[in-house]
Length: 249
Image (cartoon, rainbow, N blue to C red; front, side):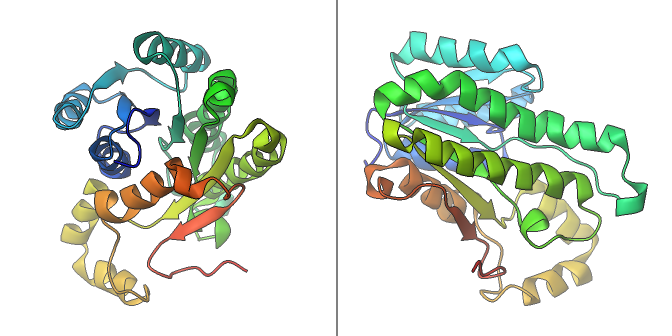
């Protein structure tokens, strides 16, 4: 029970990687605030979290700036503190660089970068009290500059930049700020696998470990580690949880 009694907020946690992290942390004793726009999936995840510990569901649009402050305040009111902030939610659309539109940039930054920034600002005072942990999300799309991922890559690299700044500024306060860059078998990837098995197989063959990560057992367990006291001396780092696809130097 490495997170016994800890309190965490995880955005985009109704399904996929966010759900995997919520379940992994709940099984280690953390109370989890599930933040998502999908009420049905959110309630399903909440029910699973509540089998292990106590959770709270927020059906909110995190692209609305004030929602970050409201959610942090409500979590602290209910649980008395905040120890863990996980900024996982992000939406984007693929297009070639030359065809990328302002609307696509606004979507990616509006659902990924700005909510990450706003939640970090909103949570800072409480994380300083608890000497807490921030886990943000990077992507190989940005690190490797993957084709057709202009808006997503730009937002993810912007998140990496502010995470490094916060790690430097908040280190003296005892706050750790790290990033996970994952590859995982999410529901969306499963749909793509079923519709394009040849392309899926080709992707798997480019991963040294020859499989996609499990949202709970692979990504979730790394998130648990980064949220725990075991990671107290790690900050400002991008942890590649991608089966060896990218080796940072």
